[in-house]
Length: 100
Image (cartoon, rainbow, N blue to C red; front, side, top):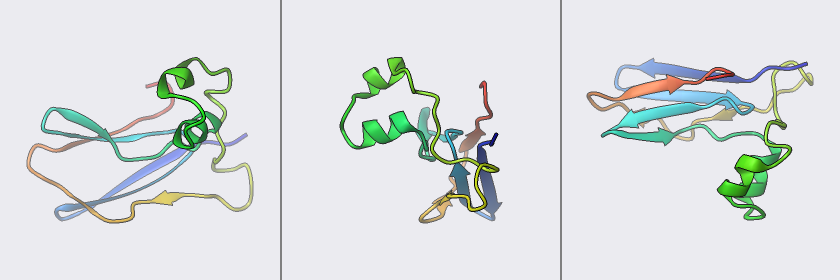
């Protein structure tokens, strides 16, 4: 059994993030939601590789099968932000937990 993780660190006007699994981090800016994290799931990999469309992903029978998680193996693959996100006035972040 494993769990997913998303973390956000804010240092002055910069945000840094990390995630593993299919838990998401969004930035709300200028009335738009931008997904900052990348899902680690079989279906997300199929979409990224162009084998299925995002519409097909919503109905895929394995849409909830994750490829990375904390607690499953001794080593954990974690995506870390490549560059800091410059925080602008009125920016909001949403860290999604399972079931949101």
